[in-house]
Image (cartoon, rainbow over all chains, first blue to last red):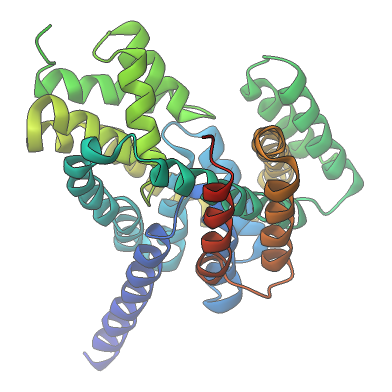
Length: 184
Length: 180
């Protein structure tokens, strides 16, 4: 009884941390969820020890090749931290409260859509959030690539995706096959 | 043209989420503007611009706003649920398998390859944003990118703190240089 109560109290603690932390990040998410990846990684790996850097990189990859928006790697982080309840809480925390805000904002939007201040806010936020995304890509490469071959795959994927319109799923399939064969 | 029904909204976003790979927003554009003609190009661009100036994931903001404009609360809920719930269930199942198989050598190897490729795709998206910044305001925007990136990578600032410190001056600069 005592043990069971202890476990559920711990689970509630983790769910509380997940919820408050992700809601907090959701409200500073501008220019896409990629901009908060460094903060998520810091929290999930360094602060809370829910997972290793390796897991974080794997979850990012898994969400990239799964249907649905890529930010649903939050679902995987939530699951790793606190099982099914964690998956649900993490996903809801990211999109629930901000969706409500969006519905409130849309009512005043039409009045201000041509205001110069609004486009200045958008133009000013962009380089700051692009900096976060650049930081995220550096941290992600650090977490993902441990061998020269892995760095090569990263560079080749970036180059091919930039220069061609090839469906990236093909590259993912090749890279996974090479890895499964023990080459990476 | 009559706005789509709640059921139509649900199935449109369900299709988008099943197909969505890489940049999900391009699938929203294709599904709503190009295939179904529920929005004009201009309505799409304006709604996207609103979503980009609001906090939260752009695509969920887009879904609730579009759904709400067509059918009020039921439309907003239908769009959000169709977009989020099915992939959340799928990823929860994948998450449950992950811990059991992650240490098998073949799986671990496959993830090494997959993660490297996913990081590469992410770099490409990042480079595209950098090019947009460089075109708009080469000096100030790229300097801001560099400061914001370095402060995060070095661990000097957290994301919320960096946003609070760097966004106001960056917005002020953009305001001073606004087109007349």
